[in-house]
Image (cartoon, rainbow, N blue to C red; front, side, top):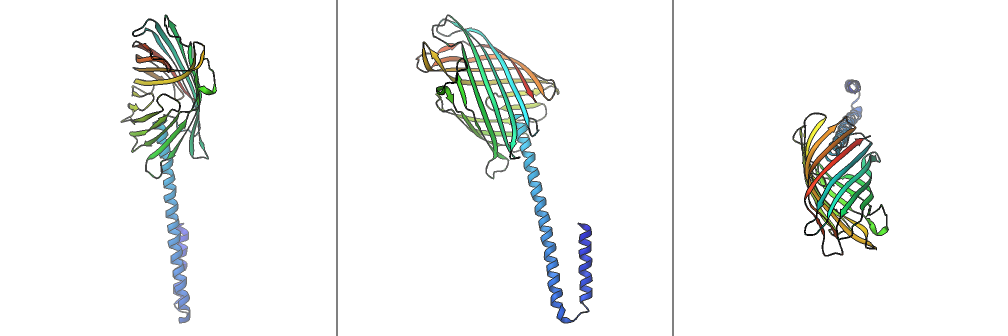
Length: 337
């Protein structure tokens, strides 16, 4: 570029010196040639500036998407990723409030997710999910299923939110079956939809706000609101649904955390020979534990704490099975492949 500019300048001044000795009739051609050279130089400079600005904008957008993905979903920055999240939670037997009986629950879940960029730019996550809750009861007067199961598919994507700076829109569809004994009856099919806006003013703060829509559920619309605050490499305040946590990294392998959750699901089960009866299962828990990262691909955690507001309720019944407050113990494994 520099050599070409020097040659252009040399030719320009040589032409001016030469044309000075020509007849006055050629001065018009001199003026025209000079104007064209100047206009061409300005056009070339403007094109280079525009190209540089476009490249800078693309680099900025790419870096922002990586930061957003790392903060929100805690995925690695590879273009493609496979993740597995699985846990088993045990709730020891507890007696019931205002009625005889005792209930214990073994709850487990498994999720596999695959993330890629459609058309080279649009981030898409596809996941397969399953859950199982084994119910063991003794002397309970109300008929209960031996287990509650769910299986489903998740599709999630993130888009720029119009032209708002540092703001994105995320939507997920979760078609699933909630029943017992892994039954997949059409009447047990549900299509929850989560949609919310993500605003990340800087690397420390992330805010989200939106709604979760549950068609055919007792509570069809619920708010989604929360934030993530990461003041440094040690502390992370991840206070968003559905598993808010506060964690402190002791070192690169060991992390201490506090956690909580509000869980309410509806299942279609068989009660006293009648099919299609809706059973609500609700549990809230709060506790803490430790997580150990073996490497960047695998980590495991164990936690314990209190379970409260724990109940089962049939939609067609006046009462509910209210379980007394108790404890839980959970073991979780997360892998990135």
